[in-house]
Image (tube, rainbow, N blue to C red; front, side, top):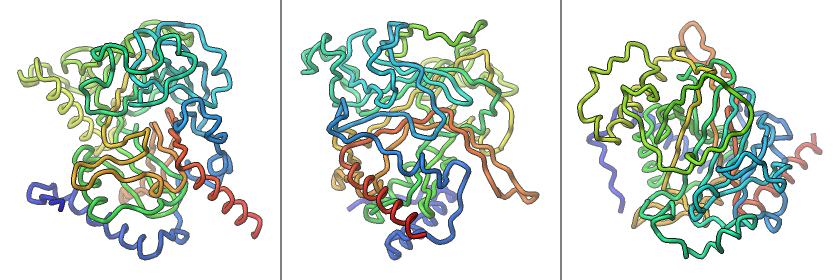
Length: 406
C-alpha cells in the first residue's frame, strides 16, 4: 500500500489536490462525460486542424513505435533538420512531418537537431528518448546494438528516460512570468488510474512545480507550470549580432550545468535588484542548490504576475528538460513498486504527449479573477506512440459522425 504523508504538505497543495480528486471522482461517475459547461481558451477550439489531423499509419513511421512531429495548427514552421555539427539540412526531412528522435547512442556531433520557428520564438530543438529506434540515416555510425562504450551513452548511469533541449531567441519582448510549459489536450481524458495513484501523481507534480495549473475537467484538460522554473537547467547566451542562418552547435549534446547566480548567463540576473552578495556560499559548488534557487525565485515571479523582466531579442535562451516517470518505448508510467507500470493508452484518449511552451497572457477582471486568456505557442511538438493510433482514428470518426448529424 502507498502511504502519502500529509504532515509536511503545503495547505494550498493539499487543497488543490483534494479539489482535483473531487473532480476526478465526478468524472469516473459520469464516465468522463464532459460535454456540459465547456469553457474554451483561444488555443482549444473546434479547428479541424487540431482535432482531425492524424499522422500516417504507424507502419510508415521511421522510428516506430514512436513518431515526433510538429503539432498541427500550432503555427510551427520547421526550417530543417541537421546534425548538430553541421549547418546543412538533410533532404529526407524537407517535409517536416516526421522529425528525428535521438536515443543517446549517437557519436559526438551526430545528434540530429531541429531548427524551427513560431510566431514568438526561433530556435533549435534536440530530443533524446531512451530505447528509441535507431534512425536509418545514421546507420553508418553503428547498428544501435550498444556496442559503443557505456561511458559515451548519454543515458548511462542516469535515471532519466527523456531529455529535451530547446535553445533560441524570442522574436519580440515577452514577460518571463507569462511563459509556461506542460501538456494541453483538445479532448477529455480517457480512463484514469485508481484515485490513490492520481492523487500521488498530483501531489508529486505540485511539489515539483508549486505554480502548477492542473485541470482535469472539461473538454480540454491541461497541466501547465512556469517555463523558467520548470526547466531542469536554464541559461542565457548574450549575442550582439543575430542571424536566422543555422549554426553548428555540438554543445547542445553536452552535459548542461546551471550557471552561478552571479554569472551573466544566469536567469537570476534578469530579476530586478539582483545582488550577488546575497547568494549563499553553498551555490558556489552545489549545482542542485542553484537550480532550486532559480525555481523558487521564478515561481514567486509567476505568482506575482509581474510583466518584468521580459525576454531580450538579442539574447539566446536555453532550456533543458528531463524526466524518468515515462517509458516512451512502452508508453507507460513507471511508478515505484508496489504500484509498477501503468499504460498511458487509456488515459490519453488517442492524444499524443507534447513538448510544449506557450505565452499565456491572462486578462483579469477588476476583482483579479481570470476571465479570459490568450495562448500563443512558443514551440509545440507531438510525441506519438502506435498504441494510441487506433483510439485517435476512432475519435476522428466520432467527430465526423457528430458533424454530419448536426
